Amino acid sequence: MKTLPIATTFGIDAPAHFTVEAFVDDQHPSIPSRIDYVFRKDPLRDVLAFLANPFGDALYLTGPTGSGKTSLVCQVAARLNYPVQQVNCHGRLELNDLVGQFMLANGTMSFVHGPLSKALRDGQLLILNEIDLMDPSELAGLNDVIEGHPLVIPQNGGEVVRQHPKFRLIFTANSAGQGDQSGLYQGVLQQNLALLDRCRMVQVDYSEPSVEKSILNETLNSLGITIDPVMDMLTDNMIKVANEIRKLFVGSTDGPGSLSVTMSTRTLQRWTNLMVTYKRAPNALEYSLDRALTLRAEPAQREAIIRIARDIFGDAWGADNG
Image 1: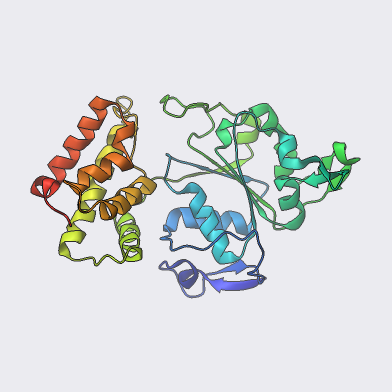
Image 2: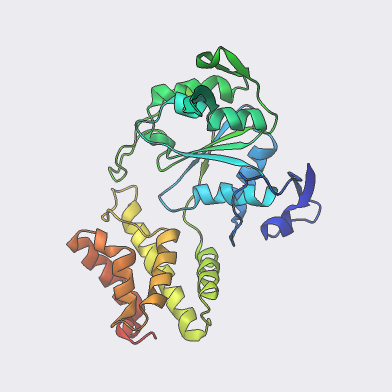
């Protein structure tokens, strides 16, 4: 292991003596690919604290779709040379799929270890995405693993896999494990309290406007677009549109949201990319917004989103942005 300064490693404002442990080997095939990424202090602090010492917990990242839960963990891992096993959960996923199974290779049946066994044995991160789509009875098999007990594999002759000190288990989900009260996330299941009681919870919301501004500027730079005052104004307004859509999607304590679609940071980047791609189209902003988001909304909701954008952009909405 080696130590790295947090400030320069993650591009944030932090005292020079704040450091984080990283793996020396930067060639492991399971290390996520590093991309340009803008880290936010609070969720970064939570992830780094967990990696330093989980205290017998799993880490549960919850937040709306596209808020950057998985990308946060993967980009932290990329900078720390931390190998990652990543699984997208679904209703038919079983614990045995994570542990391993016998497979035919070269005419012989042999046991192939799954992502849980590999991460546990080799000291890697195991990220289970959309954990709330998985059957809670299957996830109950992770309780002992979270507490630090060895993994016993009966189907492989009772093999015992002992935990590497650097093994970490991370969940991501759109719900906080109590089911989806909004009805927007199909297939979400209420999770077992025994599992949730073993989790450290972190809420990951959409990025602040200043962070999304940096993300969009990087997106435009990668496309070779000069960020002049006109483009600067356009991206500011796009972020304003995104935040108005999110307010109507999330709703408030007085009631649920009025929109069934939202504009995640991912969708905001898609809108930016398509705006550049379709810059010669009549009203490129609306044309690209349709393809980035609104064509999957109901007609009344699409019209509401277009009205929001038209009000925010004003005369620029129908202007030639090429």
